[in-house]
Image (tube, rainbow, N blue to C red; front, top):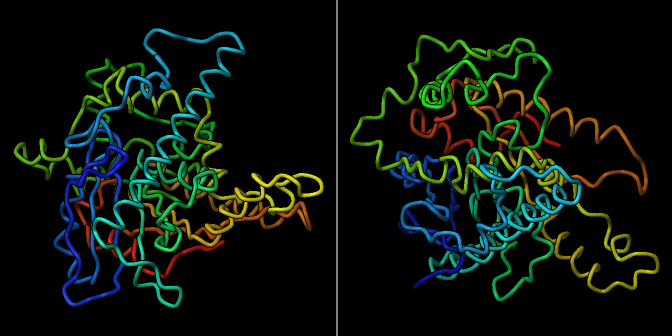
Length: 386
């Protein structure tokens, strides 16, 4: 059966033997590292009485390519540099449309997956069932897009909300959540002008797969110097294993992920997606306008409210590069500020958001310590909850 959305099921651990209800962890990969990098999670599924499904996004092995119409929505950063306000606005709107399409494809794919793989629904009285949907690194943008736009999608034959337990933003970097970099030393090898492009790629790979000792403040986050031990994850991946999890073309200049990443930052797309994830739409009667006569707006708000109690969890590695602990700081501060401000109609409606640190973990924790990552996805115990 061909499912809509263009995704490819890289691996499916299968339903746990003898269980009618169980959690199903669906994971969407990040930038150039595809679903194969999560393969060490699969053997852990039986001991957690869970199912794990690894998906490859469009442009990655086994998945469909983007159509010409879809690619046209991504900015051509190699050739175009809009200078006029109208050009910038058009580029922004096209990227927003692209992310909405990505969200709708994911929504429809999950609906079809539920039917095709007989996925059990979430249980209102228990934490050990339903879909735990996780997006790692760049893949977190598919999570924020889904939650931002879900109210605009028709329910269809499969009421997907009844199946979703929680949505995980797994080790998403600062910029992909739309937070600005700190003023002091916002280091990233790809922005290091002292390196050639080829050197940046090599240095970045070591940097992103290393381990770091961070302090508790922005100024004490370690930007550059990794720990001597453990070694970078890339050192533990053999030359034979690398092709089973790495697919570079979408991340090359001009590639789809490259255009989304740099275009999303340039046109500030990710900020709106983060806010659309955290903050719920106004009450249905407010969204409908004065007098509540806009039936379309009322229906959209009602569908959005059906997803209002879906937990969003930011899972981050304690020893990841500085952007991840910084993102956790910024998210927590934003939630605390929102709780303190406003009253009555001005009180922001906030989705349930939790934050969970994985101790001793880096950005590739699913390879180095997969048990801790899977437990972080499934547990009901968190460090912070808003």
